[in-house]
Amino acid sequence: MAALQPSEMKNNFTFDFFAKGIIYPFYTNVHNKTTSEDYINNAKGDCMSLNDVTIVRNVPPYFDARLKTSFNCLKIYHRDGFLANLKGYPDLDAYMKVQLKPKSRSRMRGQLRRLETCFPIQYKMYFGEISHANYDFLFKKLHEMIERRFSQRGDTHQSIQHWDYLRKNVFNMILERKASLFVIYDSNKPIDICLNYHHQNIFRNYIRSYDIDYSKFRLGYLDIWKQLEWCFQNNHSIFDLSYGELAYKRTWCNIVYKFEHHIIYTKSHLYQKIKATIITKLLRLKWFLESKKVPCSYRLLRFKFKTTSTAKINEELDFLTEDISAIDLNTFVLTKIDIHNHKYAFLRKAIYDFQYTNFERSKMVNIYELKDHHNTYIILGQTKIQRLVYNVSTP
Picture 1 (cartoon, helix red, strand yellow):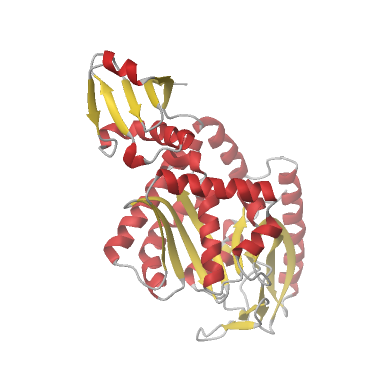
Picture 2 (cartoon, helix red, strand yellow; picture 1 turned 30 degrees about the vertical axis):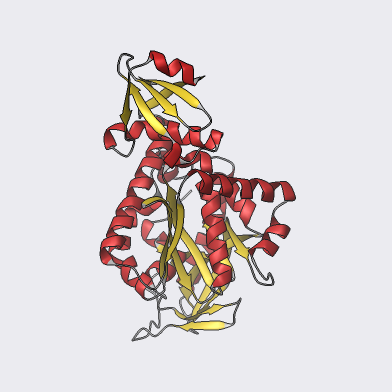
């Protein structure tokens, strides 16, 4: 099968529209089908013809990207997207009653209650205002969370390739209410950060990551809860989680859609029309083969190789845990330690897991190192005491 050139596939509508505010010159405007509002292409000059066929990927179905009269396009549909259409629901509770079963709602509320019991949790949406110092701090933390999370998975987050652009441009977009940062804090420490884009009534959840030490608390579900709550309070009726088949999207979203891909050509050019038809057929074949797990491009082969060769390259900390009684503490020589000290960062996940299991408040939990026992620590809570022994294992 003939390979499509990278230049033919470079136009990512969703990223360019939301992150860059770009409307391609062959479109007159972008029409929001959910509100009947138009976003006009005010770029100077006119694009009367294209030098070649152009492919525009990832046009979400709530937008109608309208072509100028000298162009035509073939549309094909590929890749599932996920969104929550909140229109018609008075509040989040009403939406959850329809979207989630009673047991799921109860379990979700239990997760939120557990998080807020164990830690002094704060929620903050930076939309319209943020200091530059805080912005730089949060963007650095988001990058660290992504790197650590995807290193754990043996993968790379696709947004990293755009990171410099995002870091330089999102600050002004937040001030202009075109973007936002949603943050969950444990006291003053960010533990979950989401970068979002805003257009009219649309809330586009673009990048999200969390501190994996808190993985037991399912922050990825709870940050959506809190952001949906914000949407109801701020007249955003479309909450778009875009593509990627993940369980939390199925949980929260009531619409699964297909992205449009536009193969655009100049009407008066017969050669371009023929080429556009051929490209359309090749793309359909390519996507069909990919759906059958048949590698049909260098990029796919590289991904398969990379996933196989990089998985589990990092050392993992294995903890042995044992519940003990207060009486046993008398046999140990204990030194109190502070897990906020970077030296003891490796203990945090085990301690937060202990808090999750036992509903322990962080301010009531103390950590001790056993002087005469190598790599051994005591977690002393209000209701439970646990001994931790760890060793570093390599695969």
